[in-house]
Amino acid sequence: MGWRLHLSDQPIQAVQLLGGDPRQIAVWPSAHEVCFYAESNGALYTCLRVSPPIASSFNSETWRAFVETLRAPNGVYLPVVDTGSLVIHTSKDGRLRLYQGYDGRLTLDMDGHQTRLEHRTDTPLAAVALDRELGTIGALGTDGVLHIYQQHMAIGAYPVAEDGDLTAPVLLLPDVADQIVVADAARIQALDLNGQLQHTLPASSTVGAVACSPDGSWIIAADRDTGMIRLYDAQLTLLRQRAARDLLAEAEPVQLFAALPAPGMAPGALDVADDGTLLFSLGGMLCLTHVNELTKLPRPRALF
Image 1 (tube, rainbow, N blue to C red):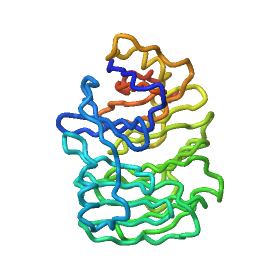
Image 2: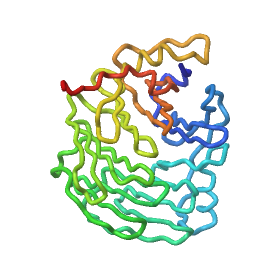
Image 3: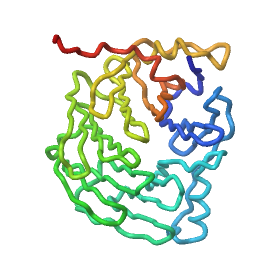
Image 4: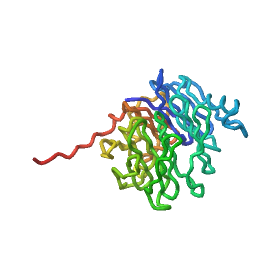
């Protein structure tokens, strides 16, 4: 059944299932603050204010000390941190970091050695993702070209959409997987690491928040028009779906009194784990549940 927790009257910015021992989650109530909760019951551990040092090089002691603070209380590194001036993507062991600057620069830091990743600097980056196990990197430009790197080595650049055809795109790169997922408001696409389209799902309504499990088995997407949460497999076959508000209503409330959001509200952020644990936000409310709580859809069967 899971649990629900009312955190704020303002929408939650992002949520992250961190795992670890004990298993913890990260919730971003604002762009510069992250709070850590117990996955088991929603108990608060602590909150961290993200304040990067000013004008520090990536090799300075001040900067190295700062990035080491970007962990949960159980020691797990935060996968993605947006500092306001750059986005930090961190591998699971903390030895590799990808710095995504708002000026379009991509810098890979491996054990303190930085490498600039080359791409068309005149084209802004729309989305970036990191395989946190192998260090594979995907960078999607606003021109619809997907750049793929294996750590510091460029693998190729592949057009996946027309210039200007992507609306609020999201890039998902599972760990140790052979595919990359490109999603925007109109579609979800699964490509191999050579940029070849494997599966595509034209959206019948507007795609909102999207996430995938670390092993790539599950892709979870919110329907911005209806508030539905839909679960797909790696081939983009729809497996389960249910209204987010219904999941929230069934979850055990952590507080005694907390009104439910209006019907039809869409999740603003979500995440899914390999074991099917599902975390999502609805306005300022947080809900932890399981994909088995979504309604299973009948699978087509051959007539003979």
